[in-house]
Length: 164
Image (cartoon, rainbow, N blue to C red):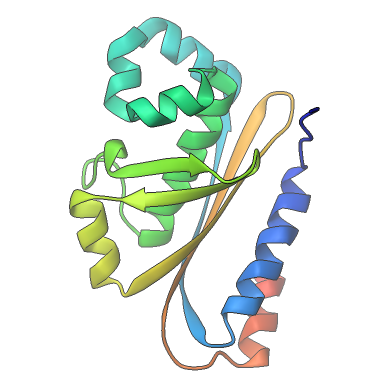
């Protein structure tokens, strides 16, 4: 079956629709976005070899992506977007504590472990909306952290939508 690739704008619009549906009973905790150059990722992997792969992606992630640098760039962008949504970064958490799994070519789910899971729990994060999109050179990851909370007003949703 041929694989379709969404533009970053289409992926963001799809994710925004999902988030607006969730925000009627939950609250937005954080949003993160990251852009990764797939060519630079290929060069990093060539230079770092298997040690770089093992330090940053789980065996399952490597298997799902076939160690393809373009797909790994997307997974890296997704991990970084989640870190940004949590307001934490490398040095505070390990990339291996953020494990991505494909739901579809452009939609991922995230599983947090260790200190990343503890930080998310402390922040009240109960769910994630995660998307990745590619063009010929770039991969973009977008993460939205959702937490328990008060009903979000329509005005807050509109303000958020206008800032995306």
